[in-house]
Image 1: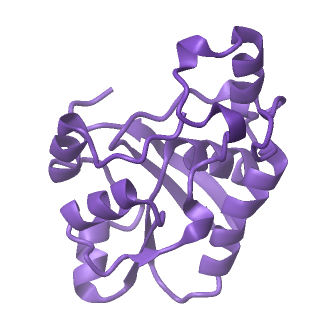
Image 2 (image 1 turned 120 degrees about the vertical axis):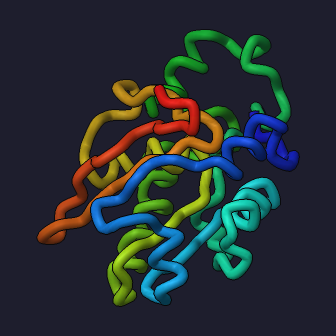
Length: 177
């Protein structure tokens, strides 16, 4: 289930043509102004996407690594037991040797807790779909079974006001929804 490959042709194209907005303006503008922070998963495909987006200085953050699926690693979804797979998507099943959903959610939310200590106007996190789903679950509350898969090279925007996360955009792609 985990691919250790560079971004696909579509992923590279989408990374070169991002669209979306944050509540305080584009992250690229914040980076230029020196008031932004860029983090990336420590996996090569995420680091490469950050580079394509112009964030060659993005800090690799191992806590943003995708959900570990244990014995399912490298298997095609079609080869998995459909009931177990649906349980995994819902956050109620962990494959043998895999990371339980609660531990995964806590791990990625720890990154946000750490970022709250940094004085910055915007944070770009180049990460994986499961990480985004876990952040949404941990920060705004929809259960994983209620969150659609997040597409490659899509944009999700969370704004923090008064210590509360608010969802501003989900799964925005260069071609629209």
